[in-house]
Image (cartoon, rainbow, N blue to C red; front, side, top):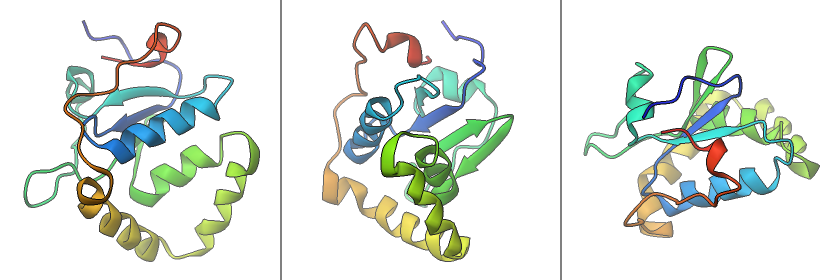
Length: 138
């Protein structure tokens, strides 16, 4: 069953990527107010949203996405927009905006292309705990 879009920003992540799963867990830990919702890019929910999911030439997913106020943020802009809304020192991530986006995105893409090599690939998506289940869509 597909849930309608909540009044919260949604982080779409590669459900098979260990780095992406760790990022989601990190966000949950540093988002005590529950601002963010999550959906795997492989989910029916993500596909029902109607936006293009960026892929590498080999067909692997290229970027996590953040749906925020009707906009889709990707690459470094998506990550920075999330980090600056978390608790603690994460707000300092805004300093990385002084780096030109083209350079930030190049670094993001370099890591993204190698993330399975460095962090591994999961056999399945994260299974949320019952307490976290309402934050996961589709």
